[in-house]
Length: 103
Image (cartoon, rainbow, N blue to C red; front, top):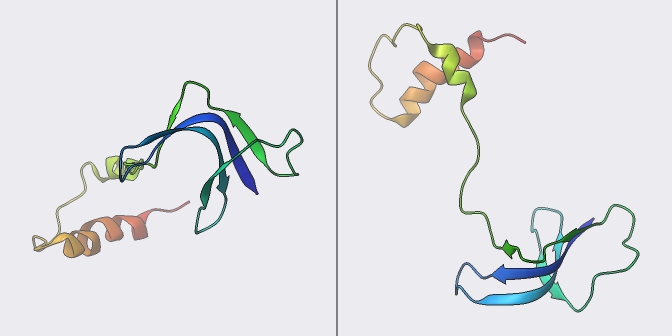
């Protein structure tokens, strides 16, 4: 399955070089990215085409996740012993909360 980005302006995160063209992004763990001379008029089944005219395309620089369940810890008693490091915070606070939650 491929994603085609038509008329994209690619910003190379290593060099900050701007390149305009069509990009093909391959799904999968390796996530290949390549410039292609044209976008297929009839994409293959499962392929998508996005019009990126006027858009900048680059790699993600942020991790967009949220620890919403930490709101459930309000009023939770503190651990018996203060955690000395992040691993102990996970073990004695957050994983304890995880185990206490039910569906």
